[in-house]
Length: 126
Image (tube, rainbow, N blue to C red; front, side, top):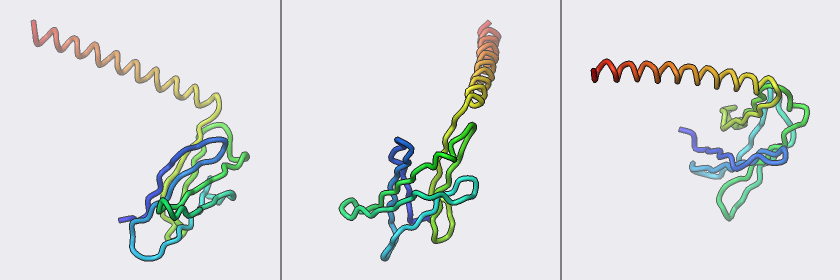
């Protein structure tokens, strides 16, 4: 069981922020690496908040990683390279088309289910 927990707090002005809490024994200092397309990015800071008993994580999203499509960032624990968390950015006109087509498919499936349900109700009652 992982004794480290990463919780996202917000994404604003190109900076992803979160909190690391630790429930294990002993002295602990988190160290994380953030990757995009398997390449580590700069602009990652982890600062201890002793009063709150956790660490604040700030990740500056590099401008050159923002492009059309889905861009996924992995937050890794440096101790064992396990994934603590992730976040994704979705952008571009292509995404809007994908979302519209998915919505159209969902609507068609819902209409089909409504018709089947109504037919079932008529057959069982009448």
